[in-house]
Every structure is written in structure tokens, then in C-alpha cells.
Amino acid sequence: MSYDPLEIERRLNKLERSNRALRLVVSVCLLGAVAMMLMGATSTAPKVIDAEKIILRDSAGNERGQLFANENVWGLVLFNKNKTKAASFIASANTMNGVLLFDQNGNMRQTITTSLDQSEWNIFHPGSDSAQFEVIDNGDGTALSFRNRANHPQVGLGVSPKGSILMMSDSNGGIRSIVSGDEIGFASFSNKGILEWSPGFDKFSPEEKKQIKDLLPKF
Image (cartoon, rainbow, N blue to C red; front, side):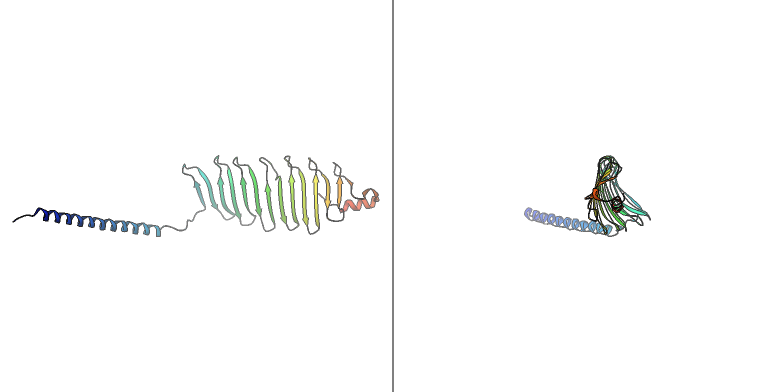
């Protein structure tokens, strides 16, 4: 029997091509099987997480927030890098819903709250016990007020069904003047809160002066 070297080489090349094709088919089948397994695993993963508290952590394991809920209040709390509060989003069953914002040192700087009867927006200076800027709206009307760094009232503006009023106070919070949209119009006060003057006040009789004082809003 004679052997043709060219024929042998041709058959070897053909066999090698067949082996490559077979390996390609096997690889595709394996990839398809893996993809089907992954799809199956994804489809069986839970779509709902049932928990009363979820803690959010960064890649280093530091707590950055909490998602919580109980029968009275539920919301989200986020923390600064130094573990102080950064922001809170709260809803409640019977009191109010609100957003609380803090600076990077954990000082409360703004609050927005609302309930069935009243809505408020407050802006705080760091370390202040009272808001330096405050807006309130409720059934009696709408009020805007400013306080100084000592937390004393400085300027107040109110609007209600009875009319409008603008109040200005001294640095100690004592009311010194009032501008009203009603009968009085304008009135000034001493540093002890005593009515000193209003248009034509010096011409009024004692009885008329008393009537004017009685018409002024009580603070």
C-alpha cells in the first residue's frame, strides 16, 4: 500500500477543522447553559424585602443611613461622615410628616413639617434654640417671623381673616411699632411696651385712648 503525503496532510487538516468546529459548538452550548442558569437564579430572587429596619453601609462598613418603620412612625435617616444626623424624612400616623436637614456637624438647620391643622418651615442658626426664620400657616392665618441671634423676635408679619399686621421689635424682643391694615393703622410703643403714639393719638380723650389700646392685638 502506498501513502500519499499530500493526501495524509489534507485529511489531518480536515480533522483539525472538524475538531475546532466541535469545540466552538460545545463552548456555545456551555455559555447558553450558564446564561439559562443565571436567568433562572435572577427570576427566583425575592422582589420584596420585608423588614422593620434596613441599615445602609458604605464599602468600609460605616453606617450611612437607616430605613425604619413601626406602627407609629416610619422614614429614612441619613448620617454624616462623623456619624451625626444629616437628614431625616419622617411620616407618622397621628402627629405630622416632615423633613429635617442638618449641617455636616449635626446642627439642625431646616425643618419642614405638616399636619392636618398646620404647616411650618423653620430655618435655624447653628446652636440656636429657636428658628431665626419661621413661616406658619394654620386655620387662624399665615405668619412670617424673624429672630435675632439671641432668639428674640425682630420682625413679624401676619395675615388672617381679621386683617393684616406688621410688627417690629427692639433687640430685646420688645414690640416698638405696629402697622395694621385695620382701624389703628400705625402705633408705636415704649421700651416697656406702653403705647406712646398713633396718628392723632395725642388729640384723643382718655376714653378714646383706652378704646384704641383695647383694639390693639394682644401679644
